[in-house]
Image (tube, rainbow, N blue to C red; front, side):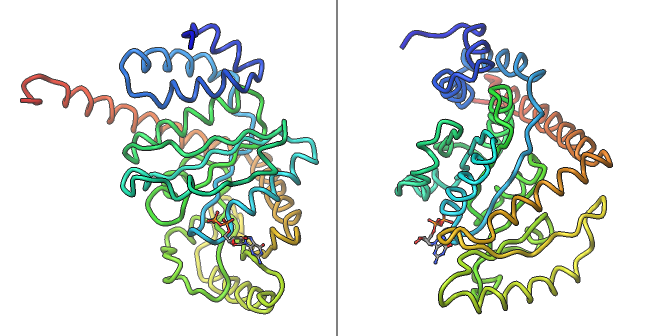
Length: 297
Ligand code: GDP
């Protein structure tokens, strides 16, 4: 394939060209030194065009219904005129030598829509590397004109803590009646959530979902309120029956309105940018240290 110039990458991304966007993300994911220099330039030039989306993080254990939810949720917001980009993160894929996410066909209907763009998980790498590439991929998505960016993580590790430091709104999906421990949900993750959603509230499960909703509402009351006074709602939905999905989007937009009005999103993003900078410095120093011939020896 012909190599692209930095100008060609940037023009293509700004024009919303999916093919060039995909190639640019691949460039960013590359660890080759010559690619790194170019990806830095591409990011630098996309940055002024980034920042206008609502950035959503979504997490939950395997099987909670994330892909089914994103499929339904995505179609709904596209119907309302939005452009949605989805990035799935699965840092465990390196360990397991195969992605949890990769072995099934996910979000089939959504991926057919022109207004949706789905990027599968970075195939491997340290959590730090994944974090850097995720932030930069969000920048490219936004420069390409997506106004809703969704970052999905598998709620089994530390990746959700990282993702929380990159998004405006963090959604935690939970099963009814499985218990927090069973779901591997650490208390810290529940505290970070801007909304908690009980999935699969349909059929025989409806009663259990109602009960779980009431229980989590009580549990959340015991937690300290979020900064800027946002109280995380507890909701339920059925992605299969398409119920409760619109309410979730309503909560997200009302959060966005409230946080834009009081400047909280701006503050949050500035703090996130500060963390990004510190992490970049740290990883550059570490790379530099490790590449010294004497250290290598
Ligand atoms: P993920 O691993 O979190 O992405 O979960 P999936 O979206 O793959 O869903 C896991 C299983 O739960 C699948 O068999 C789905 O069909 C099922 N599922 C997902 N959403 C719903 C729902 O709203 N209602 C019901 N009854 N089942 C669901």
